[in-house]
Image (cartoon, rainbow, N blue to C red):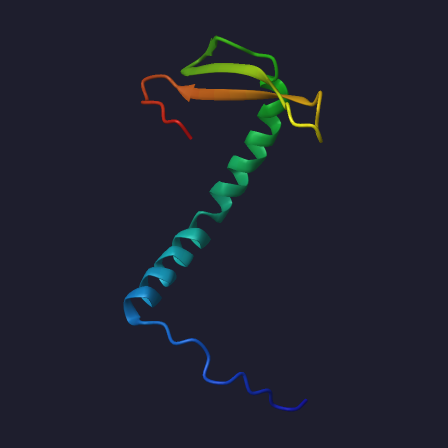
Length: 93
């Protein structure tokens, strides 16, 4: 196989390089927790569909139907759930 020359490459200053390395390390160390979170979230979605104004354990579950009003997806609706741990401040994500 012939050698391939990629040129000089991108020069990244040290502070940016350190930040990138730090974030990559955080990402890698949290990969298993993220996978577990995503699996739990996927399993929860059908269970909390149409659950509204309900407290289960330390969590408040609320939700509502959202209807799409544009011409392309006219008539489409989906259930949007909001789960908040009691005692925590809500944010408008």
